[in-house]
Length: 80
Image (tube, rainbow, N blue to C red; front, side, top):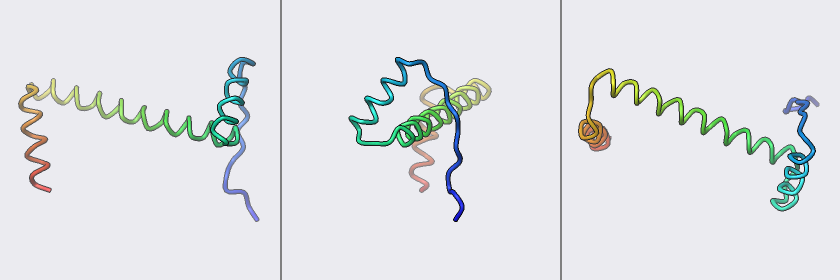
């Protein structure tokens, strides 16, 4: 039977490792699960920031105002 996860070696400073161990115990998770959750959260936030930056660039490029953006969002929501 093959493994569905891959092993990653990670080095942490002792204070951070202690914090990871404490958080995992408090949350009743393995250290691996805690770090997977943290990484997933980081990647989701990173993607959200990328989308926000894209939106800001488009607003500037198209010279849209806040009212324009709100109107366009409302139009798209009504069209659903």
